[in-house]
Image (cartoon, rainbow, N blue to C red; front, side):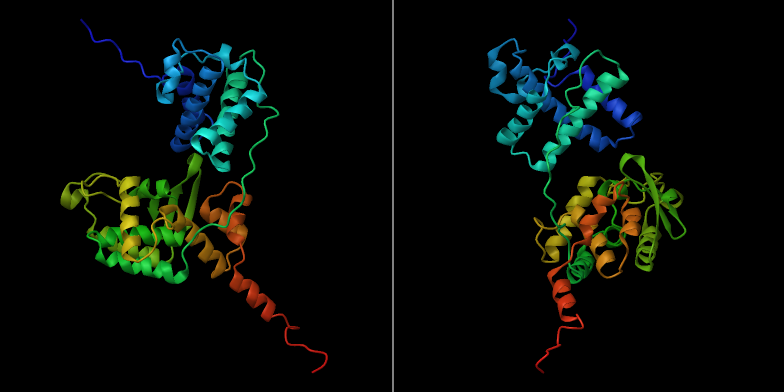
Length: 332
């Protein structure tokens, strides 16, 4: 007898349709589509409980076992604004979701209803029209000081893959690349002294490499396995021990080990914090204007870039002491 097809509680055709729409039509990255997919699984589980769609009450005892297969257009047409707010409140109470996570969840739900009402032209009312987005408190980005960045680069000397790892960290600290952008680099993306980057939403940008980046890449490429000498045909710039494109996890592990050797706190410093470091150093020491920084980082909105224009206490103190009236005293 043929083995029965196993059914996953998270199976829902509508979610996979939305995945394809977001990546193929809206140009969202796979990571964003995956995040939205997971957010909507939670939303569908919430609706399954809220509208009593499950066959057995036992299904509600373990959230991961709640079958969301019954959530269809007819169910989604019943959703009203208070239901969405209740879901967001539940996400905080049960999962400890921060403001930024709840904001992403609202974006996922909006995308779902946009797909249903605009693309599929379903005859339902979009409950997200008046949906307010959770306010996210702006925090200054965490970044390395100039001395800490130098310490990190010096700590690479103990790596078994020195040339590769040094080039990776150099690109992070100088170019402000995202992790996925670096692991996605192909050899053809290195054009003379320019790096062609495919960023979020498949948006492309070119970055002019400085001397440190050029030298680090040249040193690595000189020892990198290739088709002519080693039979390696993988076109990714950075390769793993198996001569395949290096994974995000491998880079994260390498960065963490280097951070520890540098005597820095791995809880405070992550791969993404290296991007913050590059942006902050460019703005603080290079006096790079905000529009140029936006182009270098590949930000769609200037408001995202503005977090790097924070003024440090030292700058405030210097500004006060450098005021031409700082030493002026009428009585003197």
